[in-house]
Length: 460
Image (cartoon, rainbow, N blue to C red):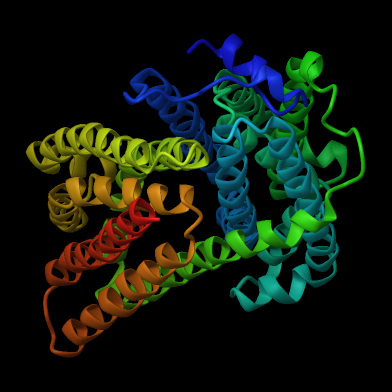
């Protein structure tokens, strides 16, 4: 299906007669890959921008680098909430598209925008007022604290706009409009890098700190990206704000979204808990894990793309009451994702030593990094399955079990095993190996739940 055909069916136009069948008996692989590229490509760009940002601010001193890092850790809370809202938006909009009810999908999108504003506006005010004590609680002091407070307060001006942009991008993907979010995402990330460089190097003349310049660049990039998206959508915006705001749909979206919000927050907590264990092995082990995390971003980007694509297409299939089609989507997505990430795992395993040297250079850190890369390479096929199963569950409206899997896998099992290994004096390699147990348990949970849920849907 071409994008022009998909646009003709979008809920941005409220005529149900414009909507035709979106899915046939066979899985539309072109549609699947378009969704993967749209979501995963933007995520990849964001990861690259993060690395470039660190390169830009690092020469300014450790206090500026610490300020940006600390501010980003606090901003993770906002990101977790917005990502959770995206899950609810995609599930409900894609379901309406599958049912060929574009007016209903339009209402879900508008309700999601309203919920985003209800959450982000008070949160922006809270972060503005409480930025200093919150960042002080993260251990920032002196110049680093001052710059980090400026980072957060500058960013609060743009948080509501960022939320609107992310909701619209998710809704468009749920409507099979993939090019517009991709183009806008690439544009805003390129703009963010350019603005970051310019604002960081001219911050004194403009009256804010270097860290504040980083957050202004990110905020402006998203706002201008939102403006570009609205311009590209202008011919299709006829019914977007027509009629009363669907207040009755706000709570259903929140009920689907809040477990996904908690999932993201718990995930961040589990990372911090595991870092606490790794820190006991010294700076070399800590640095090695940090370097390994940079490589993890590559496979996470791939997996994230397949998770979004699976969620959208499963939601559309279930909207048509076609559970068999939804199962076909999961199988097709699983085959491609596992294949791609298995190849990635083989390459990571073969070139583990070379990658470790390229990332960190230093002797002891290289050894530890290579060990982590090997364990990470082994788990690639399981990670692929995890992303697809999570997408399938979220597309079907089940956001609780992905949250449960994060509580059990990374937080309870991995941290507990790592803590026991630390207590008995095991080597750091054994600590790194807990990623295998983590993903086997986590993926086992979502796989069981997905099979149970689809079997239940088939019998209805």
